[in-house]
Image (cartoon, rainbow, N blue to C red; front, side, top):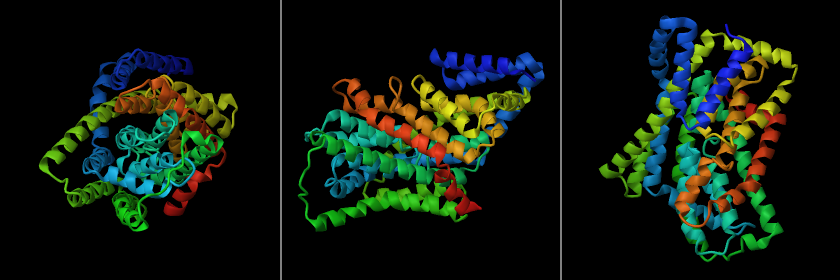
Length: 434
């Protein structure tokens, strides 16, 4: 068993290596093999192969590529663009106008894509051409798209939730239930933020009259059915106990195919492109997960969990105080690291602290995913910000940075609310599964 100092040195070394740009999967593999070799010799290193194959054969991991494929098919069939324009019919009259559409469309698309980066890229592609024809404040427009994109991993079926569930052996179904209400609350808070800004300074979002007749707007509501149908099938089948998360993901892909056919976009070429993109994203995620499994195994063999448990006892802090400490830690860390490295890289050492402090792992899962979402809109490395700027392909990225500030503050406020109102995340899992 190692002591807390050695564990701290190892964690700091991992962060330094990541800060120098080394791939997180490579870093965790290297540290795992190094730790096994130093403390257990050749037998410890040989055991890593068995652990790797056992962990990577988990059925739950199949949900990852299936949800990615679902999002790819629905993006390529044009469902997201139709959904955006349908929402704009009804949200445009609100103070803030089309800015609300960016948030609502992102929330709906998050319910089928499971990825914040994919959500930001998709909504940017649809929204930015529309806003170029209007006199909205460009910084607020970019900020609202970034904020909407940050819902991608929080609203089920978020991919980050699956990764957290696999790494911590926590029920993904419970995590999905726990994230549903916070995701909805954060969506409403973003829209409330837009209303406040628009009332304070109407020039950022000029009011526009509704030109299309009611019959046309009612007919376009049909375009909201595909994402709502997929979300209902995925979450309904899981909550009803009819399907596991992996089975629900497979069903959702099957449902997406007739939707693509309805929009006359289903073809071998479209599916080929969707499969290639899915393979690329899955390979990247699985490499990182494999490294995490190896490092977690070595840390468990070294007794790090017990060491960190004793360390928490010496801190003499309440569970709420520990969450605030981690809150500050992750906000700072999120300004230097991307989401997935931050999530996977810190879990091996942070999760034992949570267990030792008797914090519900389901609650912490929602908390940690929210922290990851904050990192996505945190300059200077927030991935969502650069994706939006790449789609925009003009102006300065400083516009994106400035536009995210009100929404960044809103997410910090949301985290504080979650820390003190934990039933927001825990009520639905208790209702659905207890």
